[in-house]
Length: 196
Picture 1: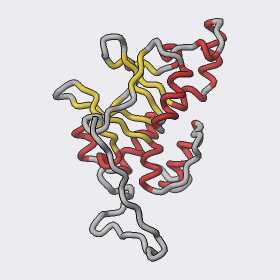
Picture 2 (picture 1 turned 135 degrees about the horizontal axis):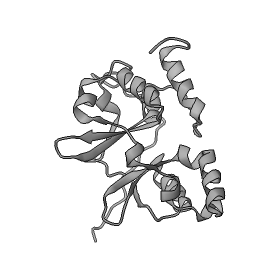
Picture 3 (picture 1 turned 90 degrees about the vertical axis):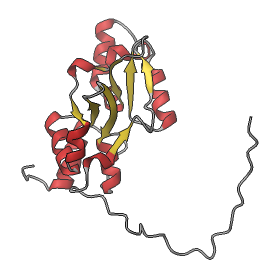
Picture 4 (picture 1 turned 60 degrees about the horizontal axis):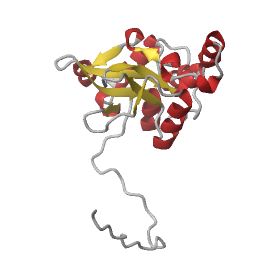
């Protein structure tokens, strides 16, 4: 195992200014859409098995500070996605009741959104679009997350998150997003009542 060394620290009394993003453009609705993609080729996603409990999924998401889990089967094949919104929805209690289980006894497969019900955007479309285009797409799909696919390799190569867009655009968003909060986010960005 490598030997790590503590880095030398300095006092901050003499530091009064924040560094400017010299030459770094601010993110806005006209910025390239791919700038808000979490690229799985650079940052591996949190993945979990279909059979793991929703309690374990919740704990794992909190631990690594993400709002979604990519769900795979025992072969490692993509099966769907589970989001914080899924876990906070009425769907969880409804599913538990219909299966005669307690909430904590549900597995990811009981609550996740299956891949056949998901829509994605191609990497090339994302590279040609803007964040405004992406927000309109998310709004029309009624989704807080959109997976990015590479048709050439038939791989899922990334994910777009409305909360990441909100963070990058510095638009206030509640931590516990509800279905109406996404509409509020889009209204804040595009103006209330305007057609997007």
